[in-house]
Length: 116
Image (tube, rainbow, N blue to C red; front, side):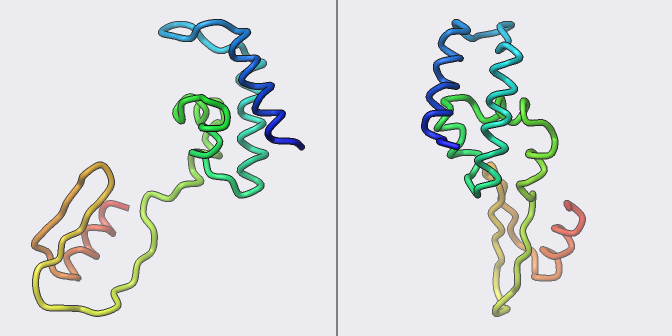
């Protein structure tokens, strides 16, 4: 599969479908084509972000077409290991600016278990 040609064909189909906006859905054929392209690229190891750039479609839109199987690919938390425990203040930085301060290692571990 020539991904560059497939992506160009997808973008052409989107242009043919006309302007997008509130209440203007993509045609079903375009949605299926985008979902199939995403699945093929993900099978080859591409990230969702790179596919959205190739297709010029918003991430949420593309993931909505792909369904729950692709959304579950990205873990919320990843395993970590404490290499060295130091006395002092621990600061945990999370997604979207979340910041947790003042917990010891056991407190951080407990917090992460509760959030998972």
